[in-house]
Length: 185
Image 1 (spheres, rainbow, N blue to C red):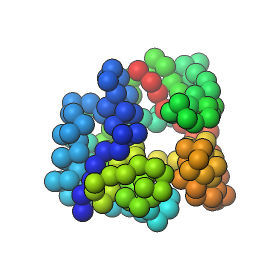
Image 2: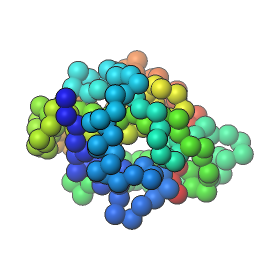
Image 3: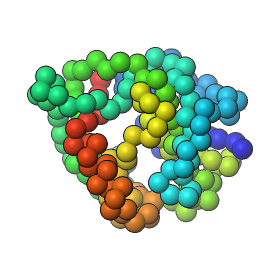
Image 4: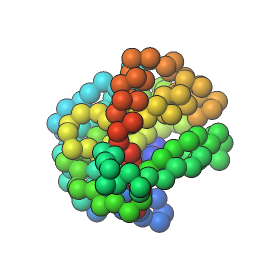
């Protein structure tokens, strides 16, 4: 099996201007090499047959991405309508500003199959392409954000994957994200 970073993931995980809430201490190339040479602790099924999650112990100083919302930090929540790319419709997102999360215990690479990526207009020279990464305290998936589920259900032409809403998964995601938020640094 071979794994490459997609242009979408490379821009988000390894931006030209590094940020505190992206992958730390390694280059995009070193990250890709690690995924191809170090056996993951676990391989989990993703939200669709074309998606796999590779669970790795965090070998960097990358911090947790999602934090619990508490009375002490609720005032640090921000929101805005944003698009991930120029072609996508803006969606409502929220995040913390001014927090200092602990270092994550796990990095969970989100992989899509070459066939799915081709369907979405991204050709890769590997079996799998990284489309994102979760930075977690547990070796398990953080629920997909409800807005991402909605975008996926809108279809490939709107920046999604074309996977319909799973109502039970959506409700579990709402329960998690109602009490957690990502952060920006």
